[in-house]
Image (cartoon, rainbow, N blue to C red):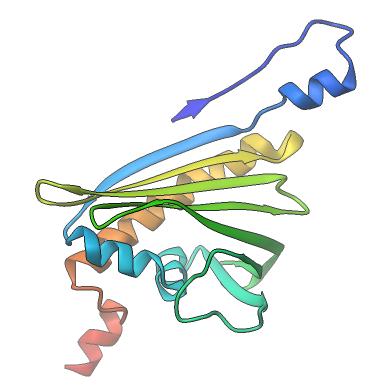
Length: 184
């Protein structure tokens, strides 16, 4: 966890305040029990995002109205729902791939919404001795709401990485455990 705070002298101009105002950072890493190439392939699918975010956040595609089978470097607009029911506005997911090879990848969502000025999420994936090292790094800025959005992000990324570990350990079977048990 890293936070940044800038204290400006009294009388600083609004421009200076706006230029120096920064968000708060959440960074978490976890070791996934899967090969790096599988992790890279999965992170490029919207179904992974939908799975690891559930049930805290549900993403409903707005533009385009249906998620593609694989992410592309472009912007997607989604409606967010907390716990699947509470509307939380729309968010732009602005995807780019700053770095990619057979052994590592970075996927960046430089997202934003009316409430959250900056949701700059960088996913880093690289091979490790016993699997894949996966890191979420998100810089959030939401004006006076930044500490609350940061706290939400801290909880949300803990949850996401727990779901990632479960999914990787079961061979990326996207069925929920209770559904798998009923099918037996």
